[in-house]
Length: 384
Ligand code: FAD
Ligand code: UDP
View 1: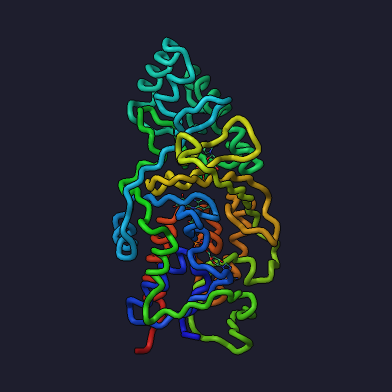
View 2: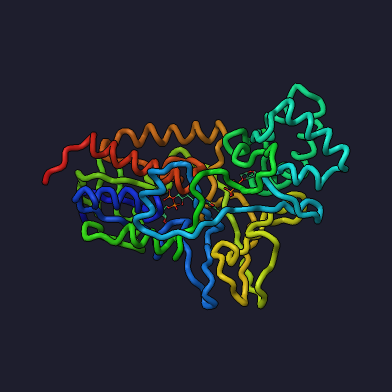
């Protein structure tokens, strides 16, 4: 093993590994899975369709630095993500926009709402549903209640078993209301899908003479953390560990498990070219699943078959895959206890969606890994 060990071959681990390797340093990356890419992993199925077994992943970022870095490892297909909501059988754009407004109300009522929205919120603005619900203008509050009930309430209950207001802005502002005809899910400057998929991109990141990759290797089995000292296979290890797994694992869950939501995926292949009108349809008023994704719509390649996945959310047990951290105050306080514990280990660095217990997108995973690489380089002296 090298003096720098990275636990996790997801996007966070792969980014930091590549940056060390490019600085001329040897790194070992271990992952307990048999595959790389973490939750961004994808594969081509027997019909030539790229499938994402851990749910739909669409790349988007405002950060040129992130886009430029990833562009070294993949070519891209331009892809702007559009989502429809199935509201009591009617398909309307989500984020809720002016098209949605005119689809849901009579022309005269929609016009009245439009006028008050542009006056009070502003033309072309994006606004969170929680702030609209608290607006001083009663007509806006009525409109917000409609959007809340038809777009946010049931979907959020299915996804989180919580009310939108209890989840707070950090999650709810991911999907705003648009006072415009904008119909893209994201408004970032860079919106692309890797031409040959995320696995291929991350494989290229990890393909480097300074990187050794060990799959099917669980950190829980090879590391132990005791009294500020790190042990690797029973011997004291004085190198660096960048850890992108669950932070509780390192400390034997001694303060309890951090709550997560997990997903059950139901895949189906159809003998037809198209299943639904958009790549993703959110079921915001009905059904037990939250959304249906149709993968062929991401790749822009016409196929004679199509693959869909339905997502069912549930509480995460210890044996389930932890997908979404639940960012309540109580859970964040519990996380802080683990973070304080981790700070006793000078050469242990926590990184990524699990170790940071943060609901982050892929671009933030890459950006945080870039910052982490700089921090580790600054805090340590490396021999040639
Ligand atoms: P992960 O991908 O979770 O990787 C962590 C890795 O560590 C895993 O490979 C795991 O096996 C390994 N590991 C954990 N514990 C151990 C251990 N003890 N020993 C060894 N290895 C271990 N982001 C977007 O930008 N766009 C999207 O459209 C999008 N959609 C998403 C949809 C879903 C359903 C989910 C769950 C996430 C989505 N994301 C999306 C977020 C994206 O998946 C993450 O931001 C990104 O993958 C985080 O990468 P990571 O490396 O931090 O974590
Ligand atoms: N959300 C909702 N209705 C929608 C879309 C999103 O209520 O039609 C809420 C829901 O709580 C969801 C959150 O907004 O978990 C974030 O949505 P996003 O699409 O960003 O979720 P992700 O793709 O990360 O699962």
